Every structure is written in structure tokens, then in C-alpha cells.
Length: 305
Image (cartoon, rainbow, N blue to C red):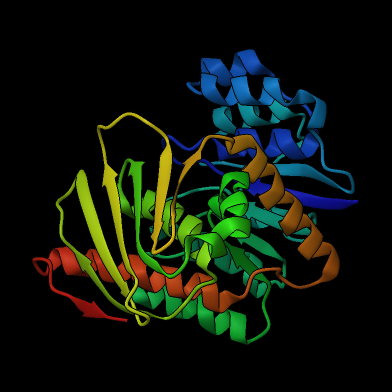
């Protein structure tokens, strides 16, 4: 049995509840709704027949607030609450860093990485070049670091990937999502780049504004990509792929499925002893995220990747 520690929680991110429920196979929907996540309770209830991942269990939890830790533990049947992050070292086989505030990731991941404990870091891995280069250096020293958006495992995207050749030569990809670039731009990037197999990027430019963020990406092949993240729009994540022979709209709706597949892949990787994602792919997407933010700060200057 792989013993997993989970670290949370950041504002508006229910992953410590949902991921623990998916792995442990247990949840209290009323409590999850009470703390502000009725949509999570709904998709867990709709998929309760597939909850639980054999061979793994979340045994330890830490958050910055004991009351939150107790809620997560009681809701998903986690037996141990720790008051200090490092108390998990020696007690767990792997760690899920389930916070999505990237400025905290290096600080919180470092004790586990240095101790040689496999870690999955929630998206995005980093939001500064300095932090990204630190994670890269640890990876090159052989440390187990895995990070991605679960959008990589979206069934809707995989269906398009198997039909991609029918579109002919791609000319344009557009993507639309809700919320902000820092935390949610990675969803659009991971969804697109996992379909087109992470080709080289030529340039990045931020052409929007805060709360109405638009990012233009040009690949070395000449393919154009535009990403739109607006704070106040309704709707789900959507991708449109336009080729010379056809086009497809991808409407991402099944969050549960992609979360579960992501967790299965991490647990499988821990069992195999190495991440199942190339760090170069994660690094490329982080460089795009960091460059787009820098472009915005510099008035929309085009930056080379």
C-alpha cells in the first residue's frame, strides 16, 4: 500500500477534498458542500461507484489551519493530521501538494524533494524563472517531481487527438476559460499541448489586461494559438482547432474523470519509481506562463521562448 500525504489548502481550490476522496473512496458530500464546494460533492456523488484507487491511501493531511485539516480528514477518512509539514517525512511514501498558489510551491515542496520523497505539485509548478530553474535542477539530480494540469487527461481532448489528422494542417487553435492567467492558464496550455505533442514555441505575447487576459502564442511551425481567460464569463473550458480540412470544438465537462486519471498516473509512477511525464514538457509550459506574465508587465512586448 502506497501511503500518501496531502498538503492544502489554498483559497477556492477544493483539491484536498476531491483528490483525497477519489483515492480513499470515501467522502461526506454535506461537509464538502458546507465548506463551499457543492459542485465537487455533486461529481463525487455521480461517480461514487468508481471512487477509490487500489494500492494507495491518503494517510496524512496538513493545512495551514487545524480546523480545515480536521474537516478534510473527517470528510475523506484520513487517519492522521500533522501540525508541521515535515512531520510527514518518514511516515508517507509520496506527497500531493494540492495548493495552486505557485509562489508557495518551492518552499513547501523542498523538504520532501530533499528527503527523496516523490511529489506531485498542483498546477502551475512555478511562476518565476528562479523557482522553475530550482525545480529543474532538482529534476536533473534525479529527484521525483511530477506536475501538470489534469486537463492533460481530459477524455474530450483525447477523443480529438485520435481524430486530429482528419483536420489537415492546423492553422489556428483558440481556447477560452474562466478566471486568471496565473492559476488557470496552465489548464488551457496543458489541454492544447498534450493534444499536439508539445512542439517548439517561437514567441509569446500578452495582449489583454488583468481579469480579461488574452495570450498569443506562435509555434516554430507557424501555427497560431490564442488563449482567453476572463474572470467574469460563464461556461466551461473550450478549445477550437482549425485545420485546412476541418475543425473541431472541444468542450471540457468531465472534471472527475481527468482528476482520477491524473491521480492514477501519479500513483502508478510512484510504484514504478519515476514520473510518467517528461519534465521538459512541464518546463516548456511554465516558461510560456512566466513569459506571458512578463509580457503583460512590459506592456505587451513579444518575448521569444
